[in-house]
Image 1 (cartoon, rainbow, N blue to C red):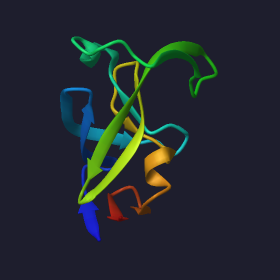
Image 2: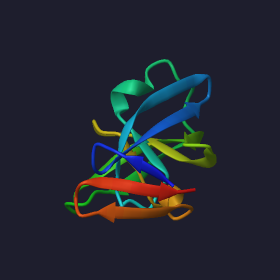
Image 3: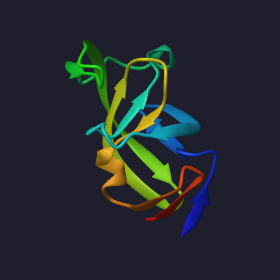
Image 4: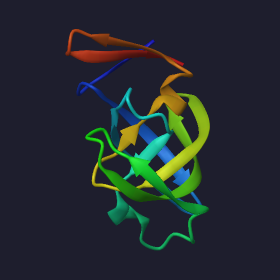
Length: 113
């Protein structure tokens, strides 16, 4: 098990095409996809697999550029859908459903992969 701070973020490394992203991502249990990377980071990537409609948490709608990427968290690697949209890094259920995550009273995350 590993302890992660700041709460509720996880450090990750994500490879999409020939680019690697390393940041902290917000753990979003309401997002059913794999990973969101800010749209501003998409510069220089090949064309996406698709542009897909997305319903956001506030019920508004937008379009996201969809790719496939490999995400490394700790020693575990996941091949997931990666969307480029918005301005924040997010980790969704496509990844977190494959881990045991404990949210410790708003102070830190404990994960087991």
